Image (cartoon, rainbow, N blue to C red; front, side, top):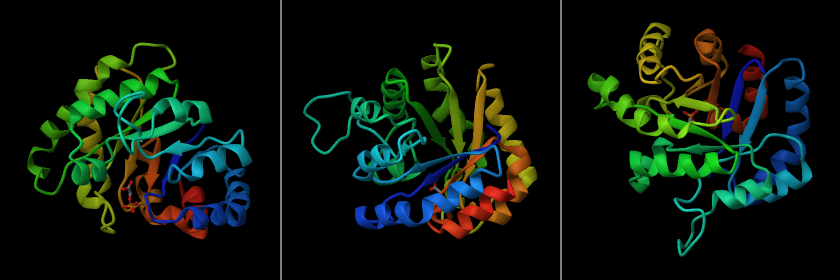
Length: 238
Ligand code: PGA
C-alpha cells in the first residue's frame, strides 16, 4: 500500500443515493485507483454497508462509528460485532463530529477502540484541536491519543491516527506543510514508539492532497470524496 485514502461520506447521501453512487461511479474510481498502489476505503452510512459488502465483496469498507458496547440495551447503537460479521475492515472512532454533537469523550473513544480491535477491525482514531484549542494543541492531542495506546498489544493491531484539525474540516483551509509537520512531530512524541500510520483530514482536495502528501501516510476525505471526479484527482495527486 502506498497511501491509505478513507472516504468519509458522513450522512451526506441517502441510502438510495449512496447505492446509486456505488453502481455508477465506483468502477471508474477503481480503474483510476489501479494506476496507483493506494488503498481506498469508503465509509458510507450503516444501512449501505450490508449492500456494499455483499455486492463488492473483497473491497475494504469502513464504518463511521460503532456502539460503546458489543451488545445490550443500547437503543440505536450499531455493534462492532455486527461490523465484524459484515467483514468491515476499518471504522472511524472519535470523529470530531461525534465529539462535538454527541459529547463523545476520550474515555468513550478508548472503549470503542478496544471493542473494534477485538473484532479484528482497524480503528481509525480521529484526533484534532478546535480553533480555541490551537494554542494548547499539543496538550489536547496528547489527551486524545495517550489513553488508548495500551490497547495495541497484538501483532496485528495497527494504530491508524487521523489528525483532523477541527477548524480545517469543511472550511476550505488546511494547515501549511510547516504547521502540519510540527504537529506530526508532536504526535510522534505521544505514540510511545508504536508503529503507526498517520492520516491528515480536513478540507482535503486534490491541491491540498498534493501539498501535504509527502508528510502523511494518507488522507481522510470528507465532502471531496462524494464527487467521483474530484476523488479521482485526489487519488492521482498523492
Ligand atoms: P472535509 O471533512 O474533507 O469535508 O473537511 C473531513 C472529515 O470531517 O473527516
